Image 1 (cartoon, rainbow, N blue to C red):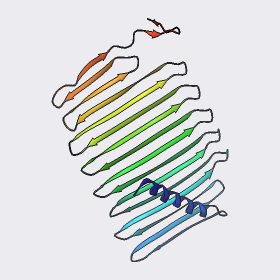
Image 2 (cartoon, rainbow, N blue to C red; image 1 turned 30 degrees about the vertical axis):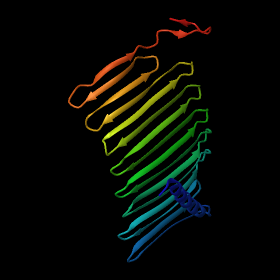
Image 3 (cartoon, rainbow, N blue to C red; image 1 turned 90 degrees about the vertical axis):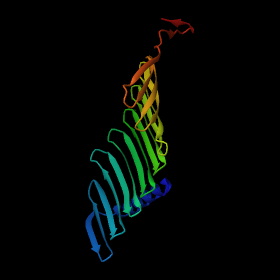
Image 4 (cartoon, helix red, strand yellow; image 1 turned 180 degrees about the vertical axis):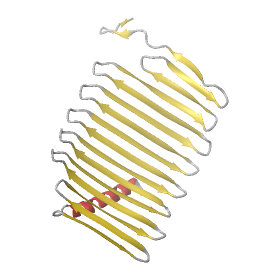
Length: 256
């Protein structure tokens, strides 16, 4: 099942539940069961919010559940969340999301989905975005996927911006071939201060499962280096370049 379908399921669940939440104040539960399965649900609404959910099980086949909630704080913050989960003989599916605002002017949004197919593989995606009332921001993303007997990939990253002008970002990736037992990965960080200074690194690694790896690291304002390791030996670190000893002047010349 594709991620657009996951999002559709989560969205449908949230819509159906929130439709029921937008009713006058009330609270209630229900449940029923029979020879083939059972079904239950709840709904509650009060002064500061509402929530509702339902779940069902088919004996010997699987189960599913959906839930949603919304709330509003006494000082002005708001929030909402919704989720859907299903599990059966073929695997499992989960999707959820949330979002809201703070009384001080901040906001956030989060969402994600996971799909696992028994005997085949799985996949996952998630993301978060947030902002403070003062102007700072944060974003992060992540995903992975794999196929049994073949391998998989993963990647994640983040971006941060401070209200005072500083910033940072980073990433990490991995790709693994299960048939050969080899893979490659990368990672890096970049930091920038409000005063204009910057530092960080980029690194790449090639590896063989259970045998060893070689990593190359390219740094800002420091020594670049490589690390080599083979099973049964000590890691070997070798500097590949010295840090900068001069900086550019406004006229294009360099100064020590």
